[in-house]
Image 1 (cartoon, rainbow, N blue to C red):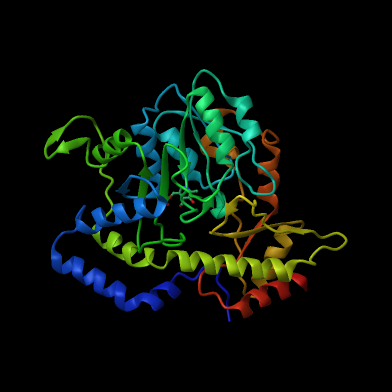
Image 2 (image 1 turned 45 degrees about the vertical axis):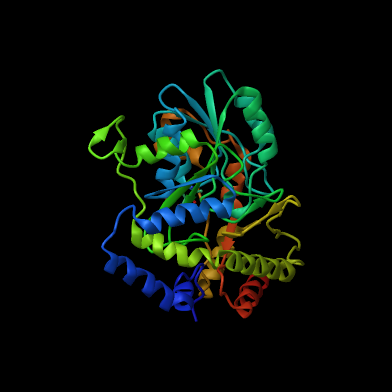
Length: 368
Ligand SMILES: Cc1ncc(COP(=O)(O)O)c(C=O)c1O
């Protein structure tokens, strides 16, 4: 039997009745864009994160773009971020006209290194976009201290980390704005694209609300040039059903991750090392991905594939070396930790509903 990296059909099977009912209610209600489900989901996600506002948008990418624009970031500005993320993080920064400035990561958590941020702050720096990669928050205390000292906006890319905690506080509520993605494979995924921004800043929230509907606050009157970036009702209705199960699913991810850690514990011998993901004691990791580091990664990946086990490489090429960012002038060797991580990372099958016997089978193949 083939073992997938993620099986998103499991949740659908679990909640089929509720989800079908929610979709039918939307279809029968005749309100398809920015209706009562979007409004309710915005309040529910804001409440879940402990923030005052939630603004539904069309994707996690748009959540980042609209947050940056609302914070006044654009041409001539520099925004510090991590090279070890999905392309959208830096793509959003470049899309608003600003310059992404990449700083290296911490090898144990794969998150942006606050120490390296200091060296890259210039008079043009306007913001920091930390990414809570794989479901674990970045070192927000140091990042926020730097932001305060240099008057920078902090926009959290929390797309992979809904439900994660940093010192007991929810991911997304730790900076000026937090961005979530409801891409189907995310810990809280819809059945299409979707995203949300959460914030405690009423002015920022208002701007994002305006930007998502072509810069208007009153129908057919446009104050600025915005976007069409709305979360649709069907997705909102589905995500509302799923939100009620999120903590249980995240807990399940944590339990399965602990199972991997236990079974993999002795997987180090001459010529082969396997490093398990490290959870900082102040963090509550939600394991969007269970990503280990290993020597001979490609060989192992091949062997897993041969055994019908799907593993993933997130991410094979760091952002500073992507062709799209050639114009920034980075070279191989500039950010060694991110580059090494790209050669060593391997994400193992993990999703809520994964059977313990599969975890054991994956580890058995790794051991063999
Ligand atoms: C870290 C990160 N940032 C941004 C995004 C973009 O989200 P979306 O695909 O919803 O646009 C994603 C997910 O795809 C992501 O993993």
